[in-house]
Length: 329
Image (cartoon, rainbow, N blue to C red; front, side, top):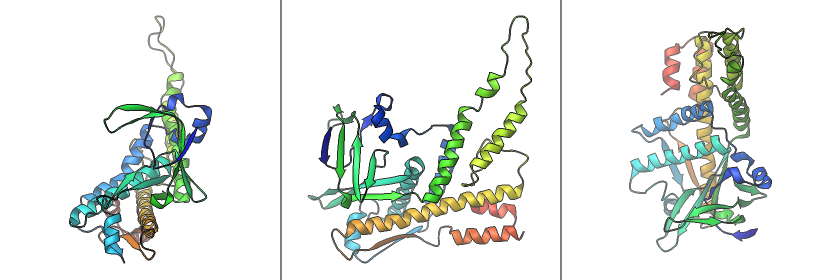
């Protein structure tokens, strides 16, 4: 096995033919593709689509070294295109959030072009990059990659030692990660056995009995599915799309909408804080006093506004329509 010091590698690998050791090291890549999980991810990322549709300035960038900040953020925030800069920051935050939901962490590589004095930020968020004691590694199983002529070439097993000074590493908050792990585990089971159990109790039609009957109570089964779903999503507040039960009260829906929006805002603010720290850390390789802060402006919703809205709902001082409009805006 080859060990080298190099930049992260984006490989195309065959997950079905991995060895037991590779499966163990890449265990986080076995992501269930169930419909519930895809719908949750789409609903969670919808907040960033709404931010991109705004006309104002959703984010602000404060720095003590504007020229160095322009170089580091060149691929994210063009200096002379203000509107484009805001949109690209939103897309960067969305990319990080998507990586959080998929892997629980995100990695970005600073690709420098010394000849043109430019920097490109490359998303290398995968399940094969590890950070141990401040050092980053990438485990590359046998696979293939495209060369400059777009020809596919085979690659061998390799461990790459990555320069930590050019790597941005962001982690999902542990509390949210635990809630998401619990939810995903139960949603995967619900998706796997959604219809297989009722069909197993359905007798087959025969010539003697063309319309067989069964004692299986599908309504009880559906009720158990709904109960398991709402318990699984208690930590995130997601109401789902296929669980419009008449048993839910308006208070139940509104409190869960507030909880789901709080999770979105918490992840957004956490990403902005970690991006500020990581860009500042990378920038100090060029200037020891460099500092940059990316934050949400008053144009965007805040957790404080959400807390106030929840308190008013508890005191019955706000209508359900206002809460729905706030959480879906």
